[in-house]
Image 1 (cartoon, rainbow, N blue to C red):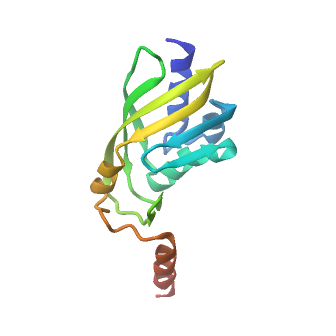
Image 2: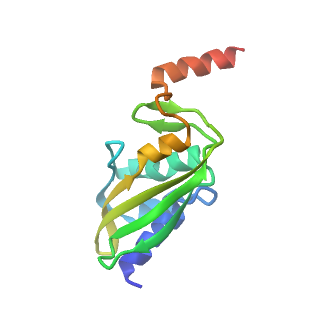
Image 3: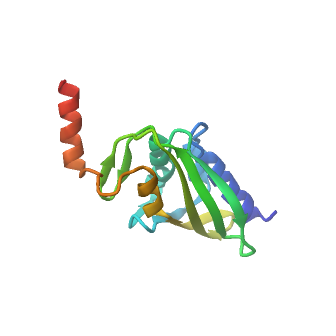
Amino acid sequence: MSDNIQVIKELYAAAEGRSLDLAKFISCFSKDSYVRNVPAGMEFRGEDIAMVASSMADAFPDVHREIFDIYATNDVVELAIRGTHEGALVTPAGTAPATGKAIDVPCCDVFQMKDGKVTSFHCYNAASILVQQLGLMGSVDTAEENSANLGRQADR
C-alpha cells in the first residue's frame, strides 16, 4: 500500500463519528492545504479544516465512511457516507434539526498529495440524495429562522 493511500485511510478513520480524532485528522494535511465541499460551494483552510470532520460528527454521531475503492492514481476514492442524523446539520441553505433518519450517500473524493500530506481534498458528495434521505426537500430553514424557531421552542 502506498504512503498516500495510508494517509487517506488514516484521515477517514480519524473522522469516524464515535471515535472522532480532530488532531489526527488535521495532521494529515499540509500547512497550506484546503478542503472543498464542491456541492455546498464551501472551502475550508487552516484550523477550519477540522470543521469538515466535526460538523458531520455533530450532525451524524455514528458517521462512517465506507471506502469502496481507491483508484490506481492513489488520489481518487469512491465511498459512501453513512450515519444517523441525530444533531443539527449546517448547510448553505440553513441549519436542519435532527431527523433521526439514516443516510447512505454516495461520494467521490479527490486528493492531491505532497510529501505524505494532503494538499487539497475535493469532496463530491451527492448532496441531493442526502437532502432526499433526510426528507428535507425545501424544508431547511434559514439560519435566522431556525434560531428563532429554536428560541420559541426553548420558551415553551
